[in-house]
Image 1: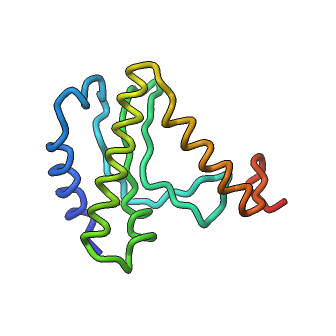
Image 2: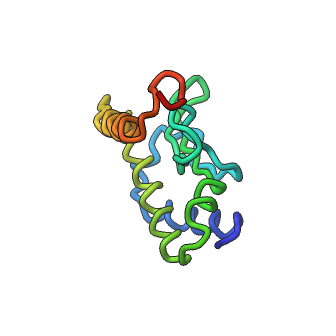
Image 3: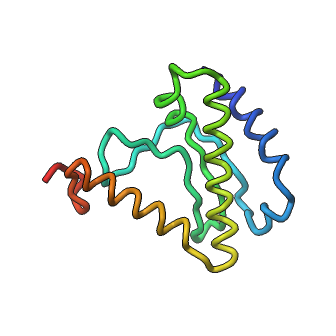
Length: 130
């Protein structure tokens, strides 16, 4: 498993491969945070790898090293790199859609979570089994 610092360096390199326009109005940038994060409504099995945030603090992307470490700790560095790139691309897509006033990917993500909860019989309002 790559260290936090190694993943941070890799993330910087990946970000440099995207066109400059992708970072327009992303005033908070991209942060790699050490913790793992779970979806509160879904329970302990589903880790959040990254999230696009648009609030009073501005627009920014958080990626969670702890989530990647928990899920990919037994995988090769190449698998981790691919998942990191896919997550970065996903969150940048949220950003670009937000700038365009489009919420398509946000809706797709919510449908995925709803299906995940239904398959596991997890209540949508309490995060506990029904």
